[in-house]
Length: 383
Ligand SMILES: [Zn+2]
Image (cartoon, rainbow, N blue to C red; front, side):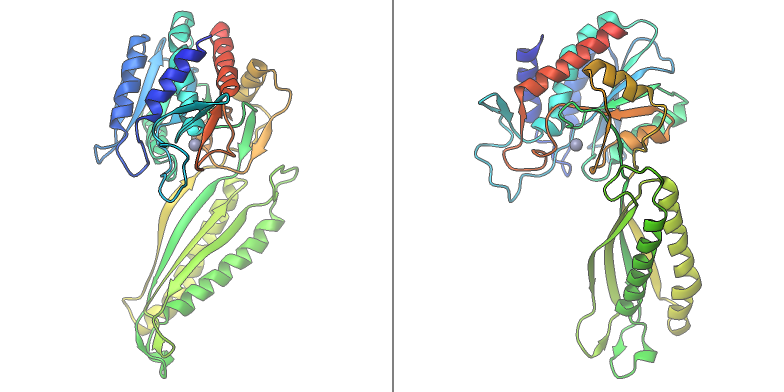
């Protein structure tokens, strides 16, 4: 039911070049129009800059306990990718629909739009919400704003289905992904007199050593029964830049690093340890030479993990709707953890494969689109 219409809608959605760096307003306006026609109350929530927005739309009453269908509107760039055809023009071939965002995740959004009128006809006392967000690919920024807004309003939906591509498998867990750049500002000087400068590269190296020590601690903190690979929280040192020459005291260094916590207390443990190390050990030593010396950590993105829970009504519902008898954990991050942080039961289940996401010739298979439509139609019957 509705496959042809979904394909047409997906072609429309792919034609909006909603690369994360650019505005998504045109696509949001289109989605708002479609959902309004279906009978939803729609709300466009602009970000501070005014060029991005989240869409929040509701079928049924404005009460707690509803079901959220969540997807992000942005896509990753196509630069330096070798596409066989124009990435923002959908191409259909051999049962596949090609285009940037086809599986990640405009296919899911197109299916939601197709089934929205059916959901509208069935909705009674339990509302259905659509949450279409901006800037997921750059750290779930839009979803962060949306969840903060729901928190401020005191609105607490019961469960959330995030339609990231899982090939319609039920996913109940993923690690968090926190990315940081830590900047070290010291004092330059001649290499022959190391004590008269503050060597930013050397302090960065000490910080890196601390991170590696924490990484070992995290292994020992792996929660019992963790199904993640590896089962513990990890830290990676991605890039270290600094200094100018052999004989100059480096005045500046930057360190790009990330951690992927399996549980939130691990992230708090790392942050607390680092804060103490910086405030009690590194900074006093640096400032003894130069009071202006500084260490600043910039948050690039903090994607909350989705912790597998013994009780999860979203997982159970989607398993029932798709006929799945097991739930999985995956290595990629989604907006699900943010919803979970609000006390909402969350599950990830959507059409297409993460294998095709972010790559040249991204596609979604037609039978995946159909499977998603089937799930949403069954959801409508359950309302
Ligand atoms: Zn995605």
